[in-house]
Image 1 (cartoon, one colour):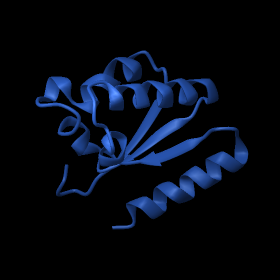
Image 2 (cartoon, rainbow, N blue to C red):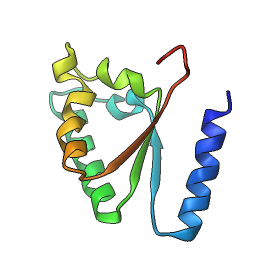
Image 3 (cartoon, rainbow, N blue to C red):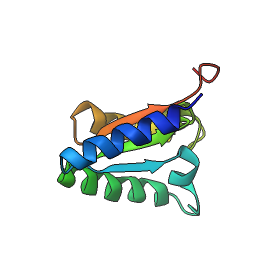
Image 4 (tube, rainbow, N blue to C red):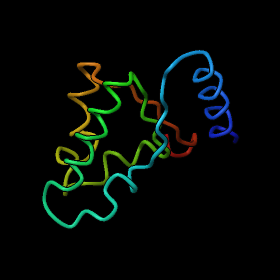
Length: 102
């Protein structure tokens, strides 16, 4: 498909012309190693704070999994946690997925 390559090229081009940061991650990496209640939420809060200060963007591979990881329901998943921050434009997010995943 080449979607990651296209996004990498765009990120490099934009980063050259401005001070924008692009942080690449996946839903699985966001919750990796979380043993206790609130672990991944604290990680997200730190990430959001740094991204909002730098005006950066979170680049999420397989963005559709944000609704499946982090909790026992969609309402408790990573996507639900990030939604209010995205709504207030605290940071920006770019996602990628295949047509099949969509």
